[in-house]
Length: 196
Image (cartoon, rainbow, N blue to C red; front, side, top):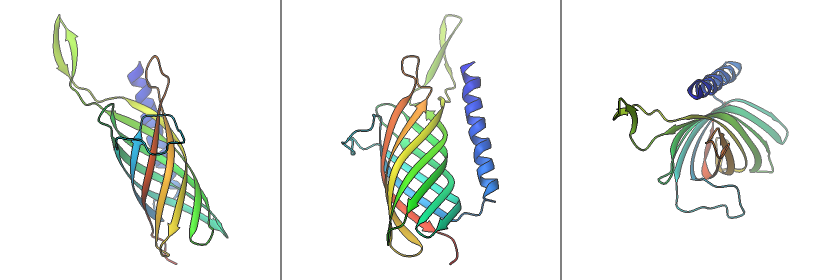
């Protein structure tokens, strides 16, 4: 029963991603690359958490709307994080960013919803006829929501350096805890693909 629910979450996310890219007619307006540190913790004033749990994020914006100083971007993002002590995961999100340009600097509000596929570290076994035998372990699929704040600095018309801090809640987590909190502190590049 639980596996069916995870499958429904994953299928719903893929359908939403498909609608997002069809709506933008899949003509990328910008591409984003980011490296972050992931922490399995609630947000706190201590932004940096040790040890470093590397996270790689690659995204494209399929729709960008600008007027004077305000800019709204919508797109998709693929990510991977490795955490030695707990879990590694692939993430696929639909994301939204709203920013206000002040010269070359742009503070941003960030939001995303998507799927997180936990990748198991160890082998899985099941009990069959009194004996344990190996079974396939694909990990769990969870619904993931993200909120954050970011800052972009335009180096040129085409390239911006970005920094952001995001909080992610993924659920369902376990019987005792309904969700798992994660934070991401990242830096990256945004490359504008639009012709001026």
